[in-house]
Length: 266
Image (cartoon, rainbow, N blue to C red; front, side):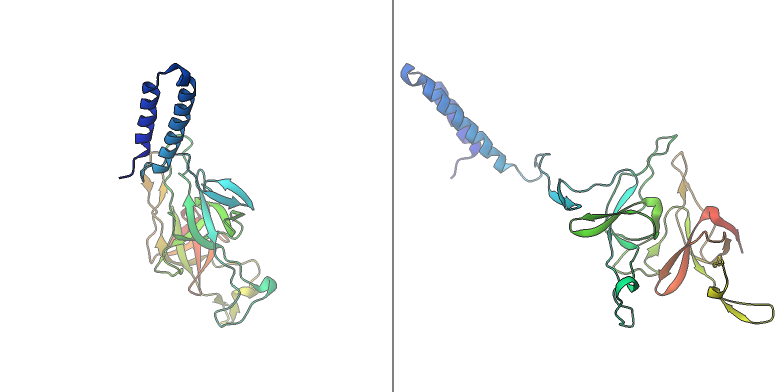
C-alpha cells in the first residue's frame, strides 16, 4: 500500500544517519533536511477528523469586508437575521416605497455567553438559542450588513417575544424573564351616554388593561435563583399607560409588559 507521510520522515532520518562519506556529507545533510521538511508538511494534510488545528477558520463578510472567522456576539448580545420586508398585504395588495412594512423580527443566528451580575459575578443565562424566532422593539438593535444579508445585534432584554417554527402564533409564542404577554382590551370604549368612541379618537391614550395569555419564567436574583412573577395566565391586569410594547400576533393586538409596570390584577 501507499506509504504514510510519517514513514517518509523516518526514511529521511535514516538517510542522514547512514550517509557518512566525506565528499557527500554536506550535500546529503542538506537534501535530507529538505526531504524531512517536505514530508512533515505533508503530514498536516492528514489531520484526523475531530483533531483539526485551532488556527483553521472560516471567512465571512462584515460591512463588505472580509473577516477571519464568524461574527460572535459578546456579553448578552444576540445576532439576528432580520426578516424580509413585507411588500404585499395579506389580501395581495402590493406595497411600494414607504408603505412597505419593515418587520422587527427575525431568526437567532448566534448568542453571547450572557451578562454577569455586578455584585455576585453570576452569569445570567441567555433566554434564546440559535434557530429560534424573536420579535424586538422598533428602535432596538444595531443594524449591520453581514454575509450579504441584513442583520441586527440586540440585547437579550430587547426581546419582546420568542417563538419556534416559521410563523409567529399565539401557540408558538413565549416571553422572557419577568415579562407578561397581555391581550389588550377592545379598541373601542363607550361613554356614559352610550356613545362608542374609537381608540384613535382619544388623544394621548393607549390600552392599558387586558387578559394575561403568557407569563415569563421570572427574573434571576443575585444569588442565581429565579424570582417568579405573581401573575398567572387568565388574570386581568391594569398596567402603566404607555408601558406595554405592542406586538401583532395573527392579526390580534397584544402588549408585552414588565412585571414592575403592572399596577393591579383582578
